[in-house]
Length: 129
Image (cartoon, rainbow, N blue to C red; front, side, top):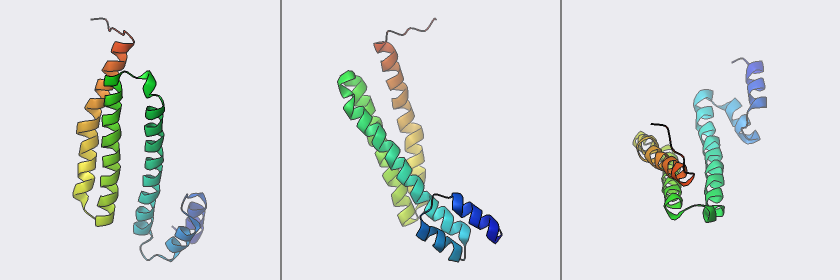
């Protein structure tokens, strides 16, 4: 990017002002941006997770025990995946990031499917066979 393009990019960026200044001074601007962007994304992921967690807790009275337990499983697995991703970045260990992705794919998706089944059962939903 030339200076004008960089200025426009930074104007629209959600980086903090000190990060924008550090980026301007960075030798490897792309590496600096990717590193800072990850932490902003982690912050958004934690905020979204917090919303999910709080919503589940506040609405547990409306959930059957088995359904709430499934939501709790997902809650625990999502938090673990977030923590693994952050630890990966701090320790520069790509295996943790791979493990976090695998956990989402292999562990969370089946629980999500079970939640769907339980909700459909609770709503007396029957698919035509």
